[in-house]
Image (cartoon, rainbow, N blue to C red):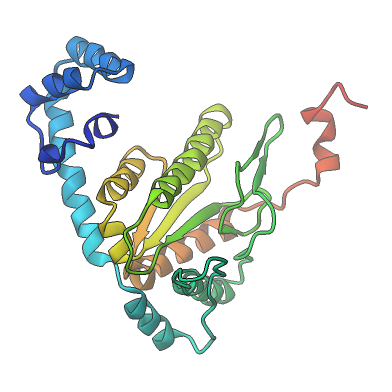
Length: 276
């Protein structure tokens, strides 16, 4: 919230001292800033922690940026691991960069290999939304995601892929990507708090030039990770190192704990007792 309020004040990009936080918020003159000021006045011990986190998120985001690749670098990595042809995104407007789906293809190649070894099902091209059904509750994802293990119904894990290539500066699409991650994460954690069912939520991102031009959005991704709305954030070259580990962990979790979901008709009486 603090980042959103003072994002236009670039002199605070590197750090902000505890004594600067409230004066900066007062200069914003918004109801959100006033609410945060009231909270910090009642809990002044949090000023130091907030200042330290402000510096930490910048440090982490710079590390993440160093892991990112250009599109050509990503293509080279993919060609070295797979002999399947790369797919591309369709572009309707003449003159716009026709980006490859190199991150999507790399994510899927790792999934197909690791899941085949573990004999675990995976959906790498969902055509509908994910859903979780418990005895008395249903959660449906607010949008289609990029993959689910082992299935869209009662998944163990869900993931979203955000790749942005080309040489132009990233725009509002980057902020939209962060909002989409946050929306799904908040809904999953709210459902978990109410029902006790945890579903792993991952984000895989890449595209050095585009994310470098939208560092504020990258730092918001760091916020999602530290707030628990993401279980892990896989960035750039980590798709070759950390993503296989994540997939193996999810495969093991699936094999040890996954139960075949009941068909909707079997859950009818407990979910909708008033409907006959």
